[in-house]
Image (cartoon, rainbow over all chains, first blue to last red; front, side, top):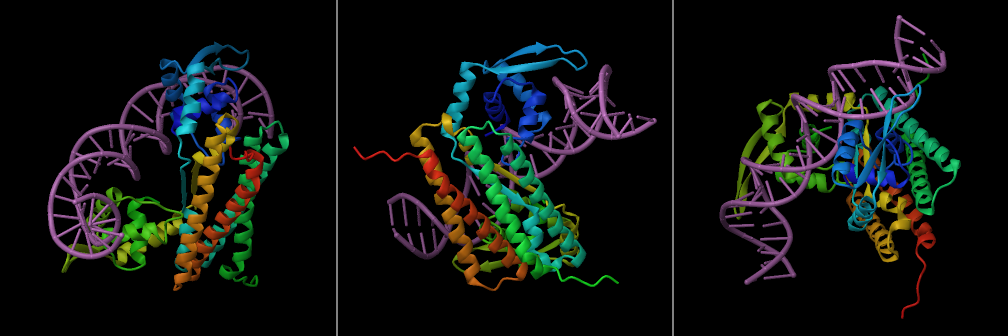
Length: 174
Length: 174
DNA sequence: ACCTACATGTAACCCGTTACATGATTTG
DNA sequence: CAAATCATGTAACGGGTTACATGTAGGT
């Protein structure tokens, strides 16, 4: 799925501006999809030209005006079609795992930092997902994605914690 | 890490042709990095021009001649530097998780197929990683990446298997 | 004074993918 | 006899990123 299609998906959760769509990518979608402003804004312009969304401008006091987009019926259908056509492909690329593959070539310091940082990130991701989950109000599908993310990240964390000793040999403080 | 840098890493495991480098991406690197022929071959040409690898042609009977690349000391150092500079970034994008997020919009059939297919893929990946691991001869770092992959994929599989009942309601065969 | 949040956009660039082209040999 | 494996490459295209540009309001 490319950015325009993902924007349709984001709008299925309710009308939103480009800025707000980006926020959805940072919260509910954050652990399985990404999109930048530079991809979202042109996508929305295009989707409007194609009749898949409609736009209206909302002026605010004390805030810049924003353009709110709504799915049209065609847009809704387009997204559902795309969902059905999707083969469920996944992309995973990890420089962390690459670093560990070549752990023997890393300085002891860098190796320790790498593991530490990765643990940290996993803990942050888990905390963020739990926070979103605990807000409640999710459909079973949405709930699945949150719990799935939490389960997988927890397994990663457990494995890293357990393997740490193999790679890091505590030195007494001088 | 981009394709040229990854090729240096692949060559750290021993001299290889472009074709053989691709095979390394399909086996030992397969669960955390990807590279296509169309990215590898130009990368190798470039690396040679930059003095990071050397090339020699090896003729074979009954097989096309192949160009074997070897890391130079500069190439080896370049890769180690890149490893140290890496922030361990990860990219994960999953259309499967997206489909599950919108599970309520999918046909019962498509939903069942989606879950089934994902389970299948997870089992295949686990089996492939176990096969590579059981060949033995890996450094602790390499071993970590294999075991990490297996641990994470098993957790995913367990979660999907356990959640299946929530989404699929077995209908008696007509 | 400075940074963050809100809000939208463009231009240049990079990297990688898809598809194509070629050709021998082995396996089913 | 078709398909897969071995082996290398190019050309066109597409998609997304980085960086830039602009401006207000509110918090530290």
